[in-house]
Image (tube, rainbow, N blue to C red):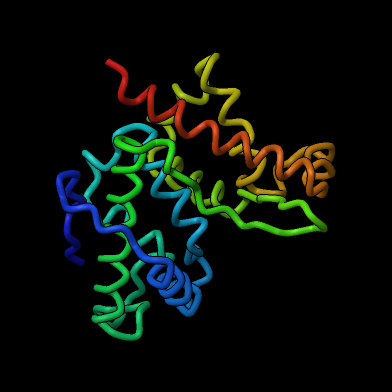
Length: 207
């Protein structure tokens, strides 16, 4: 299928809260199990921006359909109920990608990841588990390109919380699996993930 290529010079038109919710609802309603939610999408797009420059070499069709679990066979608009819905999702994803890029470049203090938030008493706990799963989906697009970052003595440890929170639960050690049952631990790791993004962005764009 033909998809528009991401243009880093395009206008920045951030999605409103209503549009973000509508995109989340649209993805949730799709009949494929692999569709991301809005948190996973946010992590996925962030990884494409702060990691190896995959957007420069990948066609849009190589990365965009993963957002909704892949383009299904049959109707040209599948898995969406109509071509209009598929086009709308494409536009929304590209707009969100450009807004993330502009925030990280121009207003890093205003950038905030989309994590889930739970309130217990007077305290808010954040979880980046879906966000990290999306992030790792971008890593899976080109593991060899990402390998130097994971192996880097300074950057590698920063990516450990991403792997713990977003990786396959079956591959966790029993000790790590037990740790992740603690909401306090998940909250702490999630906040480390947020701090990691700025470091990776700076590393990618260093002179």
